[in-house]
Image (cartoon, rainbow, N blue to C red; front, side, top):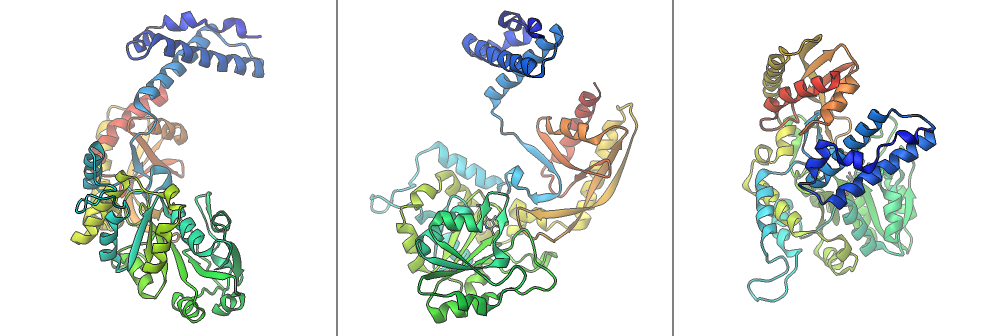
Length: 467
Ligand SMILES: *Cc1c(COP(=O)(O)O)cnc(C)c1O
């Protein structure tokens, strides 16, 4: 048994770096953390039945305690420089906000606001009042409601319109988004019964019509955000679905997922109907995310017929899905970019999607030169070049679309995974792709002065990897 080589709490406390920590934390907290880590190590030794060197054990405990205490002070959420070229990266918190949106929400968050106060009458107001007029202006909808995210939006719509009733969906549109949002599951949580129409590859309007019964409450169209069915396939067109809904007096609901407010085909992206166009087709209720192509904070936006949205506002479930003042403030500032015009120049997500390739090439050349400059101080072998990249929209939008971009490829004579990990552990962290044994940094998703910050971080990470 290797337990005899476990350090004592006092031995760990005597480490000079640990002693320094006592300036920020109580002795009790530090001692508790040391005990916890020692306990974990003891378990590990017993389970693996190994002998551990005395010095090594002490260092391991000290490092772990320092790391955990550090996190207690800084928290664990940190800035990541996104070198992946994936604009809407769900793991990276989707849309980076318009700087103004952040300033505005922070200012409001620090103070009291009229979140639920009608300043005119002095009486109780509604938090849902704030964003509505802006959303109506931008989308042309009759009414709007903002909730926690698009999953919540779909849940609220289904629960309000179809609880204990049936909703018909095409088999080709039973999507799963990011592992946790699945149409059949959300349907069952909402209390509605899913009725599948058609087959995986082909659904006709007659498949919907044949499944309508007296229990049917709505027809649902779901955007196949992260996949496409190609080849021998058939989807029901939105206008056909609307016509059927009208003739049978059933609301047509569309989960649009990303829900662009802007037609991006002018910048070379595939054509996708905008929220406004879906409403113009006659869809009764459309839901979409605030932090995908819209480029705002996490939110779910519901737009459509006033009579239906009024019912949703009265649903008690809304209380559990409601948005916070920070979200309202940030969304307000983001939407203002659309009202002011030229959102592709002011909303970061849209800016990144609409860069010209020549701008991207210039930026990649700049990054390449800066990296080469710092690598003069590096003794090891490497090769570096500016390359074309295949960037992505991400976030479950435009799954097949490749955005031609530029980046810097760097190859070292050791395992790139080790360096990639070290880069993730820098402050700020750097996330990039590994392609054919080389590191690949796409510049599309690097913002502000990040191109100037990366070379120094890379050199630091390299030194830490080799040591
Ligand atoms: C992304 C997406 C959702 C989930 O939206 P969240 O805002 O992440 O809750 C639901 N449906 C579709 C079609 C989507 O693309």
